[in-house]
Amino acid sequence: MSGPLQGLRVVEVAGIGPGPFAAMMLADMGADVVRVDRLVPGPGPLPAASGGGHDVLARGRRSVRVDLRHPLGADVVLALVDRADALIEGFRPGVAERLGIGPDECGARNPRLVYGRVTGWGRDGPWAGMAGHDIDYVALAGALHPIGPADRPPPVPLNYVADFGGGGMLLAFGIVCALLDCRRSGVGQVVDAAMVDGVAALTAMFHGLKSMDLWTDRRAANLLDGGAPFYRTYAAADGFVAVGALEPRFYGELLGTLGLDAGEWPQHDRSRWPALAGVLAGIFAGRTRDEWATVFAGSDACVAPVLTLAEAPGHPQLAARRTFVDVEGVRQPAPAPRFSRTRAPTPRAPEPAGASTDAVLAEAGFTPADIATLRAEGAVG
Image 1 (cartoon, rainbow, N blue to C red):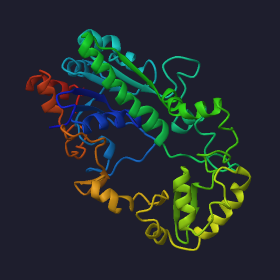
Image 2: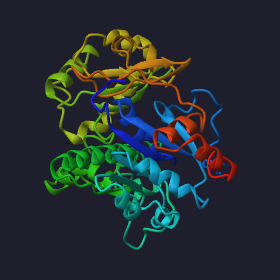
Image 3: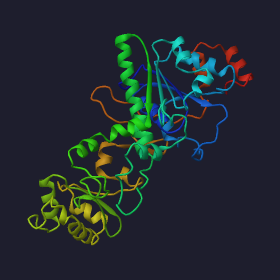
Image 4: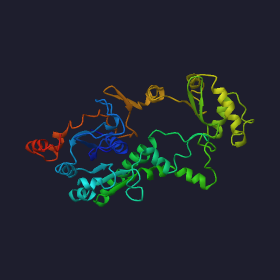
């Protein structure tokens, strides 16, 4: 194992969305992450993975199967906590405490533990106990309203924003921050990562623009929401291209490449934006997506083809950087970011739930007889 987090030990109580993403990020950077999977999987919002290495979010860690509702289940998790640096859980408020693995119980066993917990609405406030998903947190934080055409409802931005950006990534960042503080203070703490808070943090620039009267709540009327003809997507003859020519020099190169006169189309004359958008739409519709990619290759006009998930790994830029890797036949993003000295390890494929139960419990001090008893009692699998 290598990477900047080599030697860090993390217990992940298996969940969905942001918790697994945070655990994946830590494992990608070299942390030894043990995933506590359910003994009997419960219903989830997505179909079960088909096996093997297909659950990319679960890559890079070992798995134990524990029945957290069994009286002995909490004892198993607490034994893992004894030697851990951090724990991740994504239950609704109060659930971990009812299971006997909340911050008080874990902190009593290991005062240096960083207890990372992620929720949607946060652990307090009138909505704390309500269910929700990515789209709800993005909506309430004000991040969904600005997206999309003015005459249609805001589109669904997949679950990139709250689950992974405002949730998992902020949780991983918070855990590393708390670990650095623990190195100085010698005491762990709870990291309270609420997805709605994280999404709100992602909107910081737009609140600044709004305070300067540089942003309006009208959709598709601003610089970065598709209102500007030089920062939006266009349909090509067989696909789409993305145009991001924000700076005047890049804007000039865009128009020059397309045979348009920048003097006729002042970049920030908003009264001319709709007309220019129509002109550009007509031009881009005249060639295929890949033809436009050839036209703008090596250019500073900031034009890129809109690639599918399947196409992206084959693009020459991403291939050159090995932005995607194959792990046991499954194409997936490589660990990011990169470091000059402590290179992140090659991702390991997800292992089946419970594949490391005996080995991990033995490391935690359980004897073979103890493990046999726990399995016979139905506490582990």
